[in-house]
Structure formats: C-alpha cells, structure tokens
Image (cartoon, rainbow, N blue to C red; front, side):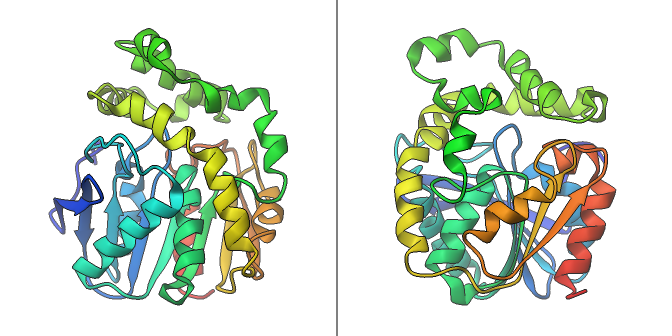
Length: 286
C-alpha cells in the first residue's frame, strides 16, 4: 500500500475546530481508537496499524493542528487547547470512550487529553517521546539532538523553504537505527506535505514553540494526580527503549514497558510489524 493511500473503509473530512479545521480520517466499527502522530509525519504514519485495527475497531486519525492536511491557524498550539479541540471532534463523531495510541508530539496532545478527560480514555499506548515539564524533561532540552525545539522565526523559515526534504532527512537519518528503513517514497510524501504553505511555520512556531507553556500546563495537570488507565510505553531500542516507561511513569501509575528491536525514533516506519503486534496485543488486554 502506497504511503497516504487509505483503504476505502476510511472516510476523511475537514472538521471545525477553534479558528480553523482539522483533517480527520474515520473508519471501522467497534471499540474506538484515536491515533495521534508527531513531527516529521502526519496521520498517514498510522496506515500499517489502522488497516489492521479497522477490522474490529472504530479508528479516528486526525492530522494535528497546523500539520498535514489540517488548516493553519496562527494560535492554539498549546497541547491542552488541542486536546479540547479533539474532545469536540470526538463528540461530533459520537465517540465517548476510546483507547489512545500516540507518537512524538502526539504523546503530548495525548497526555493533555488523558489528563483533562480521564474518564474517556480506557488505555494509552505512548511511543518514543517524553512529556514537557514532567520527569527529566529539562535533560531533553539540553540534548544536542533536539536543537530544533528552538529552531524558528522568519529567517529560519526562509532557509527551510524549498528545502523541506533536506530538513526532514536530518530527522529521519539521525534519529533512526537504519535510515534505509525510511524509503524514498515515504520521505518524498512527507516532504511534500511539509512544503505546503504554513506547514513549517506551524510546526516550529506553533507546536514546538508551545512546549514552554505545555510544561507549565502539564505540571498543573499532574498536580491533580497520576493517570490511572493502563499505559504501554514503547521506545525504539536505539532511542528511548524501555526507559520511556520511566519517564511516562512520572505521569501515570500503571505503565508497562516495551522496546522495539532495531529501531530508532521512527517506530512505525522502521519496524511496523513489531509495533502493530505489541499495540494490538495491548489493546486486547494481553
């Protein structure tokens, strides 16, 4: 299946959110699962998992605010704001309780959602990124590999314009176990999406720039208590590995660790078979 080519079991539409629209794919029937992507991807990253889960689940796959095929509002990138938009989307679609499966920035939106609406989240699979303001987040800010957290501004956007593929290659190459696992078609697909007007601006000056406020918001959410739903923390063995469970454990009381072999950060691109097996087993309660 080509990157971005969703099976006919899924329908997609733009749904109204605060000051814009969010592109949402929906398919299947059964227990609901919400899939949230991160930077360098769009909802398309979830195709290998979605086509398996859709056989016996209802699957909801948005492109995050200002990313992919969603619109490009100037504000509202705080993760609690995005979580509230998702809650409104789910209400419109008629989904109340659901499992969360998230990666990278999707983890941050997912935590905000789970902390704001704990009664709606039955399980959470969190993949290969920590949470702003929680655990050893300050160490992450000092990591040379995350220099891009503060890479923004109009001159930066001018530098990146027309060179989106070069920028994304940096992430795919440096943060993977084997860069060849992320093929040319995948790289070209995401480069085209991140070359859309407003996409880089909203990633850098929207999603990343909100991290400081997200840290403050997360500390306030955590002060109300740890999450109680079962959580599976998955890290690539060349990235966070089983250590991700330690970080997530600062925010959740019931965390299980899992590591993906021969994978860096890009778990769904590098080792989709392993990831799908782990996630489907967890969602089934095993």
